[in-house]
Image (cartoon, rainbow, N blue to C red):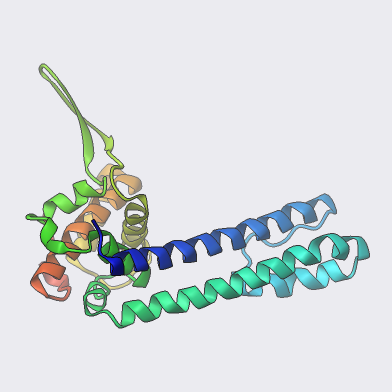
Length: 230
């Protein structure tokens, strides 16, 4: 059973995610309706500037304005609430000593650290850090029958949100983080031999082990002491 505090953090993260999804759904609905009238928006429009780009186009046409302005107004309200929840999440992470230590790992931000901490809740539940990756479904399934022992895709067991945030953190570490580290070098070597997706999953599994170990030991990330296999 998770603690009340862990459930509260998970509720905060879930509502933030839900509001972001609804904001994106309304933006995509507006895009689809504008295409009917021959108006194609740029492929990438930031959430904060979406209303400023679309509203002038709509208000020039009374038919479009009558149909789509309510959608834009609803999206603006949802996005404002999302921003408020996003600020709360970042504030909660910045005020948590464990999350601050986790965020010393390249690619791990407030969302990943809070999600992981709330899902584990009590690190002593895991006797070995290596079992954390399996708990969140990041280890390969195995088919064993007679002489056959074939590893398959990851099991996808456990908390899907934790698995998704660890995958995103691993992808950021490999693809966007400029600072070098042994874990990044190891992941890049895997990417050349096993492909990008397998490499990101392997790094996500290693991040789960690493974050738990740091939590248990009370240590910060050291770039020159992370290597080996996961």
